[in-house]
Each structure stands twice: as C-alpha cells, then as structure tokens.
Image (tube, rainbow, N blue to C red):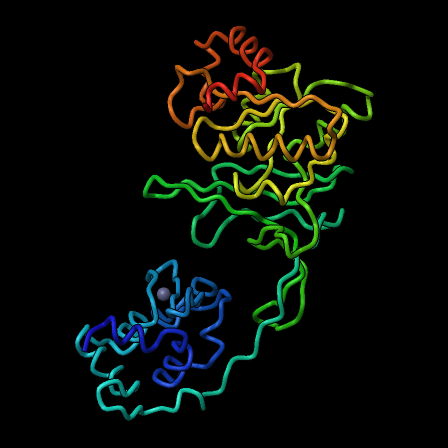
Amino acid sequence: MTVQSIKAKARGQWKQVLVYSTGLPQSVFRDVHQPCPLCKDGDDRYRFDNKKGSGTYFCNRCGAGDGFKFFKKFHSLDEDGAIDKLDEILGISSGDPKINLSAVETFKSVPETTVVVPAPVGAPKPNFYHYKHGNPSKVWTYYDMLGNVFFHICRFDLADGKKDVLPLTYCHYQDFRSKAMAYGWRWKGVTKSDGVKRPLYRLNHVMDSIQAGGDEWILVVEGEKTADAADALFSELICVTWSGGTKSIDNTDWSVLNGRNVIVFCDNDEPGHSANIDIYNKLMLLDPTRTVRIVCAPASKPESWDVADVDLKTANVDSLKQYVSQASFSSLQTELD
Ligand SMILES: [Zn+2]
C-alpha cells in the first residue's frame, strides 16, 4: 500500500475520513479561521481549505499539509502507521471499509460571501494584516467614478523571495463564530460572477480630467507599480492600469476612456504583447473614432522590461518620452512580424 493509493481513495472524502477518525466536530473541517486542532492552541491560526478535495489545511504556527498529514499528525503516527490505519478505514486492501463514507453526515454549506462594492462611506478602515503573509509591502486602492473605495490590492513579499498579490474587498459574509451574517473586509476579489466590472486603477485622475474638460492622452501600463512609476515619468499623460493581470482585461470597465486617445504600453514579454492587442481591440470597439497607439519597449530593453524599471536618476527621460509619443500601431506590427 502506498501513500498515493491512500490519497487517491480518500480524495474528496477527507472531511468525512477525518471527522470519523479524529472524533473532532465537523466545524473543524471548514474553510474558516479557528483554533488549531493539531497544535491545539490559538484563536484563528488554522483553517481547512481542502484544495482539490485533498484535505489541505493551514496553520500559521505548526504548518500546512494535506489530509494524510493531518491524520498522521493528529494520531502521532509515522508514515507506515498512517498508511496502515487509513487502509483499514478505507478498506482498500480488504475491500471492507470500516466506515460507510456515504453515511457520514455531510456538511451544511456556508452561505456565500458576496462583495459589496463600492464600500459604503461609513465602512470601517480595513486591517491589511494577512493571517499567512503578515503586513503587505504595498497597498494600491481602486476607486469608482465617484471616488468611493472599490477594493484594495495588497502586495506581500514572501520569505522565499516570491510575492503574492491579494485583493481586499468589503463583503457580506457569515461570521464563523456567531454564524451571523456580517459586513467587513475579506480577502476576496471582484469576479465576473459578481456582475460588476472593476474600475481602472487611478480612475480618480481620469475623472478629475473629465470634470476639468481636459483632453490629455491616457497611458495604459501593466500593473499598479508601473502605473505609479509612469505617472512620475509622464506628467502630461494620465497613467492607468487594470487589476488582475493580462488574463483579467475583460473584467475591467474601459468605457470610461471613451472619447480619449490612448497609448497602450504593457510589459516587454509575450503576455504583455498579447495584452497590448487585447486592450487595443477593446478600446477601438468601444470608441472607433479615437486613436489608440501601442508602444513596445525599445529593442535594447530586456524581457519583461517596463517603465517601472526606468531609473529616474540615470535614464534619458526626454528620449523615452519622445519614444513613447512617436510610437504607433504600425511600428508594433513591424516588431511582431
Ligand atoms: Zn497548529
């Protein structure tokens, strides 16, 4: 008997296996923050997220694992001991399971968390501390057309040098302790199923310009950090971006840019080049009378280069500005061919 065959058999049924074998209440195996049943301490350090039905859990003190590891740790077994016990419970070798998995009471579903956007004016200030990642290294706030907070995007720099970027949105959700429905900030994004488009990042600057009757060109770049950097470089343009990366272009409301000429300047890599085209097509569909130019990074720049990589102290900012203002869609065609 191998760990693989145990995991294959138990997939999708870890909640039932663990409730049966540990005697713990069902509520321990829900995706909500709660005390840890393994290190038996804390208040909200643990949750059971059951990714792909594999029984995964996370504790910010004693670590993460899957259903097999939970079982092993809970019963203080070694690998072989856990395999034997689970084989017995699941009846893989014997063909005679100790439990009737289908008879184990199934879980009542938790009411869905729904986004409330924009956040009400009286909503409390969010706490950006994340249970797993700690404090974000950077927070970008998205506003709607009236200047109300739509959501926050938080960047976390992880210990292994990687990063995680998470949305924080005001939501209606079920409090896991009181079971009452409540309002508050949750780590959740605005998705297609919410039936509402996301605003552009730095939309408030676009709105200011519209109100002032301005006609500045809009510069669309890829990512909030780059939009901030572009704003510092191109003061004569209004620099914006969209949230969620190159696969989320459709989730954003671009119609607010109707009537405006736009320069699209995404990252110097394959997803960035595709995003340039997708945004170009989207903008021209919304308002065919405008001009949209696509800028590609100068040929001398490395893969993934963007204007956030410009060192303001050493770069020839004037030549970059000239490069951006003179680039056109046809020059892109040449580069792609
Ligand atoms: Zn723990």
